[in-house]
Image (cartoon, rainbow over all chains, first blue to last red; front, side):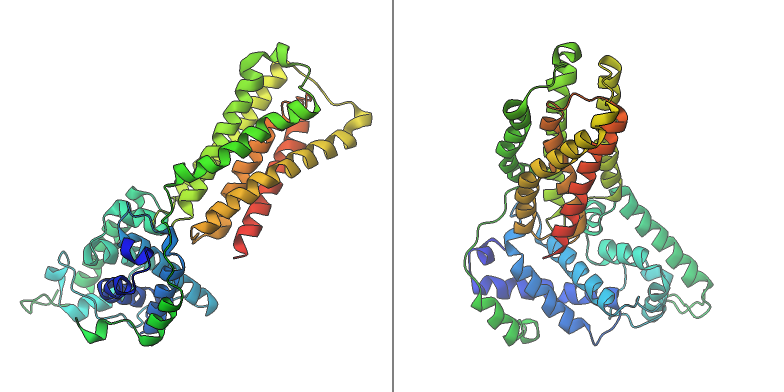
Length: 176
Length: 215
């Protein structure tokens, strides 16, 4: 990132390769419209470029990039004057390690789609993309305990949904 | 390298067109130091250029210059928080935002009550409108240089919640201005302080929020 700030174009290429896959997943989970995601990824990188001065080398890159992606998604949703539809499309998310035992991948995706937006975001940021709760707090503008609460309540909702869902089965094929 | 993960050509060209080297921003508390000269001018301008309030002896150092110094320190602290808010990935929580509002209002209220108790100076009815206009305009106008500089500083970052960052700059700048103006205005009547001085700080806050929204 520092090389990119110094005007190195290949550093931008490296940054894109490192960040694009996770930003695509994150933006997809926010807007839940696979057709919009590539445009939003591009817009995020354009905003990263415009705001590269604001990056502080003493801080990690990913929270900075995810915060900008989040803003891009919020602006997009605001301009379209609609909230993400519950049960809408979710990107192909990796199975959460903590939730893998609760059900199969498809059941998990549906349960995630039905979660409260804030809780789903906290779960994905923590369990899929490995952010600490302090980083999530600074990314979305809540306290660290607030971020932890969102994630733990989301996991509890996920467990309840998968155990009550009927269609959800665990990996051994046993119905919940 | 996976070709699928290479940046799209149009994006790469857009980046390449505008890729001059740039220096990274310093941490917020370091950038807030840019505000110190303006804060010092605001702290001293009204009492030096107009006059020092007549009840400074009665109030003592702590309730006169000490309270103004407290307002200045608080104003600088709030601008530093605004500068942190303006960097993506370091957003402040709603709890801190509430704490900032409570601290700003609480500090001014406490100073007002204590100065009123030590040196009660009510307004005369015939000069009410004139004094009100002087204090509202004086505080508001003297806050504008600090507001302009702090908005410039947050603009150099990349505020994702510009209205909030601008409002914080407004509160901080308003407090910086009031720290000097209260050393000129000797009317300690809470109705005057809340109706003129705090109203002016609120107006600076709204101005900051409105200007910061206009990217």
